[in-house]
Image 1: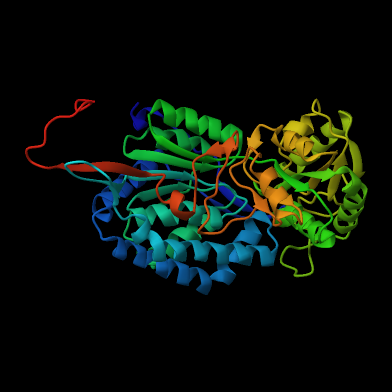
Image 2: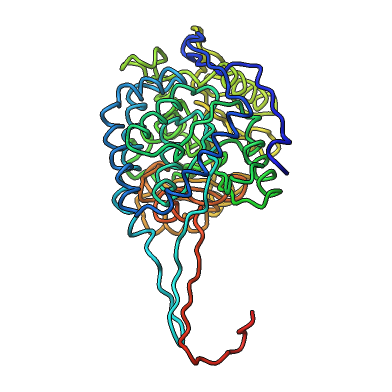
Length: 477
């Protein structure tokens, strides 16, 4: 299908709305279809020269980008807080992590992209890693800087070029990132920001110059993108929802475990795919854990996310807050016990009370859904085997954590969890050198680490056969 056959109308502006008070701060006119097509063409033209540059030249811009992120940390973190409501110290942490990602690939890309020799008779063989071309990134609002860094840094280093459609509620973050990368020395077209609504994504996917798509978002969005890209036979990487289990096996360092339980649930106001959403606790610890979790969540202080004293941020939007309230109410109506919260906080903005649900049965919608906000589910189990069965009884399989003083026991349990990642005695997290991704309805493919840079590369076999060698069995495939 020719991309020009997908005609899109863009009647609505893209706006920054402060979720702490609901105020519309700034509006932007979306790009036209012609501007979108031109942006993709610019990225393709840039790719033809960018792929030919030595890795050392490509990563020089990444190193400079890392420096600029730290120099502009106040500006960037301020935009994150303003557009999606993240607490100030969390926003600064996000920018710091993003700079680390750019630095990691600046320092390691040459080694990660080096040809890989293979054993071969009568000659030599190697895998060469070559870029694919223009990639579309579809990024979410919950980590407006980090999500872009996770996708952009390895692919720019690898020689691909990027057109990026950011979440519509983060236009100023998206503009600031593009400016930063331009200031870091990227040539025109290597990274292009698309200021467009979500419905434009299909048009970009069908453009024949686009060679792959990476999306982080809901499983519904992932399904739609995978379907469109599959029709075009284009590679995709999807990082979708999560319903991570936080499994408590014993009371080793129990107060620390409880402190991390709250952090794992309410960091970023619970709006993280790898947030701990289901707390699975061995029976003799259940009452102590529930009481400790409740005490800590009651103590959270809602307020202005720019105030350092605030410990509970607003959700990212009024729509997000209302969806969470609806899910909680439906869960209670279906038999769950409301231990704490469950409603709105009486103040302007998209604030939801810290919430705890128990007694959630498999026929309850809350058992299967992702609750994206400060709402915890707590389950009681009697054995390790029951914990594993419950943890795996979800369509999502992104991350999870196991908490125990017995490392062997924790490792044995972790080995049986159906997830892309398991952390022991620490909440599921992200580091530049570690691969990140899931399975089942949490998506496929990996970002970050040595795996992340190779998702959108062509692993080309180059085989040199000695002259005079004779055909072998299977010579013709």
